[in-house]
Length: 281
Ligand SMILES: C[S@@+](CC[C@H](N)C(=O)[O-])C[C@H]1O[C@@H](n2cnc3c(N)ncnc32)[C@H](O)[C@@H]1O
Image (cartoon, rainbow, N blue to C red; front, side, top):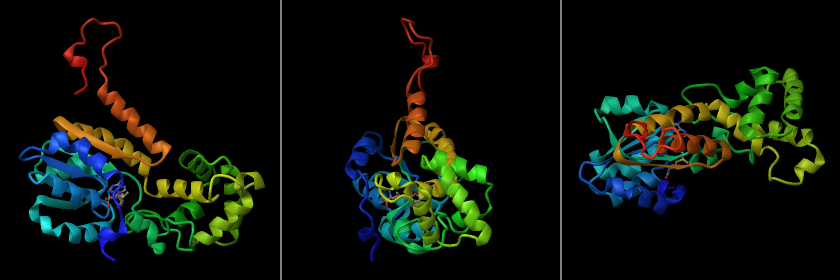
Protein backbone atom coordinates (compact mmCIF):
# COMPACT_ATOMS: atom_id res chain seq x y z
CA UNK A 1 0.00 0.00 0.00
CA UNK A 2 1.37 3.47 -0.76
CA UNK A 3 1.99 5.82 2.15
CA UNK A 4 -0.59 8.21 0.63
CA UNK A 5 -3.30 5.63 1.06
CA UNK A 6 -2.45 5.02 4.70
CA UNK A 7 -3.25 8.36 6.25
CA UNK A 8 -5.45 11.37 5.54
CA UNK A 9 -3.79 14.38 7.19
CA UNK A 10 -5.87 15.87 9.99
CA UNK A 11 -7.30 19.39 9.44
CA UNK A 12 -4.95 19.78 6.49
CA UNK A 13 -6.46 22.89 4.90
CA UNK A 14 -6.78 24.64 8.26
CA UNK A 15 -3.10 24.02 9.02
CA UNK A 16 -2.05 25.31 5.61
CA UNK A 17 -4.23 28.42 5.99
CA UNK A 18 -2.87 29.16 9.44
CA UNK A 19 0.76 28.87 8.39
CA UNK A 20 0.30 30.57 4.99
CA UNK A 21 0.96 34.21 6.00
CA UNK A 22 4.41 33.24 7.27
CA UNK A 23 5.38 30.90 4.44
CA UNK A 24 4.51 32.74 1.22
CA UNK A 25 7.94 34.39 0.92
CA UNK A 26 11.25 33.43 -0.68
CA UNK A 27 13.57 31.60 1.69
CA UNK A 28 10.86 30.64 4.18
CA UNK A 29 11.63 27.56 6.28
CA UNK A 30 8.87 25.39 7.73
CA UNK A 31 9.44 22.62 10.27
CA UNK A 32 7.12 19.63 10.51
CA UNK A 33 8.00 18.25 13.95
CA UNK A 34 5.88 15.11 13.41
CA UNK A 35 6.52 13.96 9.85
CA UNK A 36 4.64 10.64 10.17
CA UNK A 37 3.71 9.51 6.67
CA UNK A 38 4.40 12.97 5.32
CA UNK A 39 0.84 14.05 4.49
CA UNK A 40 1.13 17.53 5.98
CA UNK A 41 4.73 17.87 4.80
CA UNK A 42 3.86 17.02 1.21
CA UNK A 43 1.06 19.58 1.17
CA UNK A 44 3.38 22.25 2.61
CA UNK A 45 5.96 21.60 -0.11
CA UNK A 46 3.28 21.62 -2.79
CA UNK A 47 1.43 24.76 -1.66
CA UNK A 48 4.48 26.86 -0.74
CA UNK A 49 6.89 26.32 -3.65
CA UNK A 50 9.38 28.86 -2.28
CA UNK A 51 9.62 27.23 1.14
CA UNK A 52 12.15 24.72 2.44
CA UNK A 53 10.91 21.92 4.72
CA UNK A 54 12.73 20.42 7.68
CA UNK A 55 10.84 17.41 9.04
CA UNK A 56 11.48 15.41 12.22
CA UNK A 57 10.28 12.03 13.41
CA UNK A 58 11.54 9.69 16.12
CA UNK A 59 10.24 6.66 14.22
CA UNK A 60 12.75 5.37 11.65
CA UNK A 61 10.04 3.61 9.60
CA UNK A 62 8.03 6.84 9.28
CA UNK A 63 11.17 8.57 7.95
CA UNK A 64 11.69 5.77 5.41
CA UNK A 65 8.12 5.84 4.09
CA UNK A 66 7.77 9.62 4.07
CA UNK A 67 11.23 9.87 2.46
CA UNK A 68 9.95 7.91 -0.56
CA UNK A 69 6.86 10.09 -0.74
CA UNK A 70 8.80 13.37 -0.59
CA UNK A 71 11.65 12.29 -2.90
CA UNK A 72 10.21 14.28 -5.85
CA UNK A 73 10.85 17.50 -3.88
CA UNK A 74 14.60 16.82 -3.79
CA UNK A 75 16.68 19.03 -1.50
CA UNK A 76 13.73 21.26 -0.59
CA UNK A 77 12.97 18.61 2.05
CA UNK A 78 15.42 17.66 4.82
CA UNK A 79 14.27 14.72 6.97
CA UNK A 80 15.86 14.16 10.37
CA UNK A 81 15.65 11.29 12.85
CA UNK A 82 15.11 13.19 16.10
CA UNK A 83 12.80 13.60 19.07
CA UNK A 84 11.11 16.97 18.65
CA UNK A 85 12.56 18.52 21.80
CA UNK A 86 15.88 18.28 19.95
CA UNK A 87 14.67 20.92 17.50
CA UNK A 88 17.18 23.61 18.63
CA UNK A 89 20.13 21.21 18.09
CA UNK A 90 18.75 20.09 14.73
CA UNK A 91 18.40 23.70 13.51
CA UNK A 92 21.86 24.47 14.84
CA UNK A 93 23.38 21.56 12.93
CA UNK A 94 21.64 22.64 9.75
CA UNK A 95 22.77 26.26 10.21
CA UNK A 96 19.21 27.58 10.33
CA UNK A 97 18.90 30.22 13.09
CA UNK A 98 15.17 31.00 12.76
CA UNK A 99 12.19 29.48 10.97
CA UNK A 100 8.93 30.93 9.68
CA UNK A 101 6.52 28.06 10.38
CA UNK A 102 6.27 25.06 12.72
CA UNK A 103 3.71 22.28 12.75
CA UNK A 104 3.08 19.61 15.38
CA UNK A 105 0.55 16.82 14.74
CA UNK A 106 0.84 15.05 18.09
CA UNK A 107 0.49 11.39 19.01
CA UNK A 108 0.88 8.19 17.07
CA UNK A 109 0.38 7.75 13.35
CA UNK A 110 -2.20 5.52 11.71
CA UNK A 111 0.68 3.35 10.53
CA UNK A 112 1.95 2.84 14.08
CA UNK A 113 -1.59 1.95 15.21
CA UNK A 114 -2.21 -0.38 12.27
CA UNK A 115 1.01 -2.40 12.62
CA UNK A 116 -0.03 -4.88 15.28
CA UNK A 117 3.55 -5.78 16.22
CA UNK A 118 4.20 -2.20 17.43
CA UNK A 119 1.80 -2.96 20.28
CA UNK A 120 -0.16 0.34 20.37
CA UNK A 121 -3.57 -1.17 19.69
CA UNK A 122 -5.66 -2.82 22.39
CA UNK A 123 -8.06 -4.33 19.87
CA UNK A 124 -5.63 -7.08 18.81
CA UNK A 125 -3.24 -9.32 20.69
CA UNK A 126 0.33 -8.14 20.11
CA UNK A 127 3.63 -7.67 21.98
CA UNK A 128 3.31 -4.88 24.55
CA UNK A 129 5.90 -2.54 23.04
CA UNK A 130 4.49 0.96 22.25
CA UNK A 131 7.85 2.60 21.57
CA UNK A 132 7.64 5.07 18.69
CA UNK A 133 11.36 4.48 18.21
CA UNK A 134 12.03 0.78 18.69
CA UNK A 135 15.79 1.34 18.60
CA UNK A 136 15.82 2.85 22.09
CA UNK A 137 14.04 3.04 25.46
CA UNK A 138 11.92 0.60 27.46
CA UNK A 139 8.80 -1.18 26.24
CA UNK A 140 5.32 -1.09 27.78
CA UNK A 141 5.85 -4.68 28.98
CA UNK A 142 8.95 -3.62 30.92
CA UNK A 143 7.06 -0.71 32.50
CA UNK A 144 4.22 -3.03 33.51
CA UNK A 145 6.49 -5.80 34.81
CA UNK A 146 9.10 -3.73 36.67
CA UNK A 147 7.69 -0.40 37.90
CA UNK A 148 6.77 -0.15 41.60
CA UNK A 149 2.98 -0.29 42.13
CA UNK A 150 2.85 3.35 43.32
CA UNK A 151 4.42 4.57 40.09
CA UNK A 152 2.01 2.53 37.99
CA UNK A 153 -0.98 3.97 39.87
CA UNK A 154 0.33 7.51 39.35
CA UNK A 155 0.90 6.86 35.63
CA UNK A 156 -2.57 5.41 35.07
CA UNK A 157 -4.21 8.24 37.04
CA UNK A 158 -2.24 11.11 35.53
CA UNK A 159 -1.67 10.02 31.94
CA UNK A 160 -4.79 7.89 31.50
CA UNK A 161 -7.16 9.82 33.80
CA UNK A 162 -8.16 6.32 34.92
CA UNK A 163 -10.42 6.39 37.99
CA UNK A 164 -9.83 2.71 38.74
CA UNK A 165 -6.04 2.90 38.56
CA UNK A 166 -5.55 1.30 41.98
CA UNK A 167 -7.82 -1.66 41.18
CA UNK A 168 -6.09 -2.25 37.84
CA UNK A 169 -2.59 -2.00 39.34
CA UNK A 170 -3.48 -4.36 42.20
CA UNK A 171 -4.51 -6.93 39.59
CA UNK A 172 -1.38 -6.28 37.47
CA UNK A 173 0.91 -6.77 40.47
CA UNK A 174 -0.85 -10.02 41.42
CA UNK A 175 -0.62 -11.36 37.88
CA UNK A 176 2.94 -10.28 37.09
CA UNK A 177 4.17 -12.17 40.16
CA UNK A 178 2.85 -15.36 38.54
CA UNK A 179 4.16 -14.59 35.05
CA UNK A 180 5.46 -11.38 33.41
CA UNK A 181 3.23 -9.65 30.83
CA UNK A 182 4.33 -9.99 27.23
CA UNK A 183 1.30 -9.33 25.04
CA UNK A 184 -1.70 -7.02 25.09
CA UNK A 185 -4.61 -9.50 25.25
CA UNK A 186 -3.80 -10.61 28.80
CA UNK A 187 -3.69 -7.00 29.99
CA UNK A 188 -6.96 -6.13 28.23
CA UNK A 189 -8.65 -9.15 29.82
CA UNK A 190 -7.30 -8.26 33.27
CA UNK A 191 -8.57 -4.66 32.99
CA UNK A 192 -11.98 -5.93 31.93
CA UNK A 193 -12.11 -8.14 35.02
CA UNK A 194 -10.80 -5.44 37.39
CA UNK A 195 -13.34 -2.76 36.49
CA UNK A 196 -16.79 -2.63 38.12
CA UNK A 197 -19.75 -3.50 35.83
CA UNK A 198 -21.07 0.08 35.74
CA UNK A 199 -17.73 1.45 34.51
CA UNK A 200 -17.71 -1.00 31.61
CA UNK A 201 -21.04 0.19 30.21
CA UNK A 202 -19.71 3.62 29.16
CA UNK A 203 -16.62 5.13 27.57
CA UNK A 204 -15.68 2.55 24.91
CA UNK A 205 -13.03 -0.12 25.44
CA UNK A 206 -12.12 -0.23 29.15
CA UNK A 207 -8.44 -0.71 28.24
CA UNK A 208 -8.26 2.57 26.32
CA UNK A 209 -7.14 4.76 29.23
CA UNK A 210 -4.51 2.29 30.49
CA UNK A 211 -3.05 1.94 26.99
CA UNK A 212 -2.91 5.73 26.57
CA UNK A 213 -1.14 6.02 29.94
CA UNK A 214 1.45 3.35 29.11
CA UNK A 215 2.11 4.89 25.71
CA UNK A 216 2.69 8.35 27.23
CA UNK A 217 5.06 6.88 29.84
CA UNK A 218 7.01 4.69 27.39
CA UNK A 219 7.63 7.62 25.03
CA UNK A 220 7.98 10.30 27.73
CA UNK A 221 5.42 12.20 25.67
CA UNK A 222 4.38 14.98 28.04
CA UNK A 223 7.87 15.76 29.32
CA UNK A 224 9.14 15.97 25.75
CA UNK A 225 6.24 18.17 24.68
CA UNK A 226 6.69 20.46 27.66
CA UNK A 227 10.26 21.16 26.55
CA UNK A 228 9.50 21.20 22.83
CA UNK A 229 6.76 23.84 22.60
CA UNK A 230 8.71 26.68 24.28
CA UNK A 231 11.81 25.70 22.26
CA UNK A 232 9.73 25.82 19.07
CA UNK A 233 8.32 29.24 19.92
CA UNK A 234 11.86 30.51 20.53
CA UNK A 235 12.94 29.19 17.12
CA UNK A 236 10.33 31.29 15.30
CA UNK A 237 11.35 34.40 13.37
CA UNK A 238 9.37 37.61 13.91
CA UNK A 239 6.00 37.06 12.19
CA UNK A 240 6.50 33.28 12.35
CA UNK A 241 3.60 30.94 13.06
CA UNK A 242 3.14 27.69 14.95
CA UNK A 243 0.23 25.24 14.63
CA UNK A 244 -0.32 22.33 17.03
CA UNK A 245 -2.86 19.53 16.57
CA UNK A 246 -3.48 17.80 19.90
CA UNK A 247 -5.80 14.91 20.64
CA UNK A 248 -6.22 14.56 24.39
CA UNK A 249 -6.80 16.94 27.24
CA UNK A 250 -3.35 16.55 28.83
CA UNK A 251 -1.52 17.61 25.67
CA UNK A 252 -4.10 20.24 24.91
CA UNK A 253 -3.79 21.88 28.33
CA UNK A 254 -0.02 21.90 28.19
CA UNK A 255 0.15 23.42 24.70
CA UNK A 256 -2.43 26.11 25.49
CA UNK A 257 -0.62 27.12 28.69
CA UNK A 258 2.68 27.60 26.91
CA UNK A 259 1.20 29.42 23.92
CA UNK A 260 -1.01 31.64 26.08
CA UNK A 261 1.99 32.60 28.24
CA UNK A 262 3.96 33.46 25.12
CA UNK A 263 1.12 35.52 23.65
CA UNK A 264 0.46 37.77 26.64
CA UNK A 265 2.50 40.59 28.14
CA UNK A 266 3.96 40.44 31.64
CA UNK A 267 3.25 44.06 32.64
CA UNK A 268 1.34 44.63 35.91
CA UNK A 269 -2.41 45.15 35.30
CA UNK A 270 -3.77 48.70 34.90
CA UNK A 271 -0.80 50.37 33.17
CA UNK A 272 -2.01 52.93 30.58
CA UNK A 273 0.80 51.93 28.18
CA UNK A 274 2.34 48.44 28.00
CA UNK A 275 6.16 48.74 28.08
CA UNK A 276 7.66 46.96 25.06
CA UNK A 277 10.02 45.05 27.36
CA UNK A 278 6.99 43.16 28.76
CA UNK A 279 5.40 42.36 25.35
CA UNK A 280 5.43 38.80 24.04
CA UNK A 281 8.64 38.14 22.07
C1 LIG B 1 -0.04 11.82 14.08
S1 LIG B 1 1.44 11.32 13.35
C2 LIG B 1 1.79 12.56 12.16
C3 LIG B 1 1.10 12.36 10.83
C4 LIG B 1 1.55 13.35 9.77
N1 LIG B 1 1.15 14.70 10.09
C5 LIG B 1 1.05 12.97 8.41
O1 LIG B 1 0.41 13.80 7.74
O2 LIG B 1 1.28 11.83 7.97
C6 LIG B 1 2.64 11.67 14.57
C7 LIG B 1 4.07 11.30 14.21
O3 LIG B 1 4.91 12.00 15.11
C8 LIG B 1 5.92 11.15 15.59
N2 LIG B 1 6.24 11.63 16.92
C9 LIG B 1 5.45 11.59 18.02
N3 LIG B 1 6.09 12.12 19.08
C10 LIG B 1 7.30 12.51 18.62
C11 LIG B 1 8.43 13.15 19.23
N4 LIG B 1 8.42 13.44 20.53
N5 LIG B 1 9.49 13.44 18.46
C12 LIG B 1 9.50 13.13 17.14
N6 LIG B 1 8.48 12.52 16.51
C13 LIG B 1 7.40 12.22 17.24
C14 LIG B 1 5.34 9.77 15.56
O4 LIG B 1 6.38 8.82 15.43
C15 LIG B 1 4.40 9.82 14.35
O5 LIG B 1 5.06 9.37 13.20
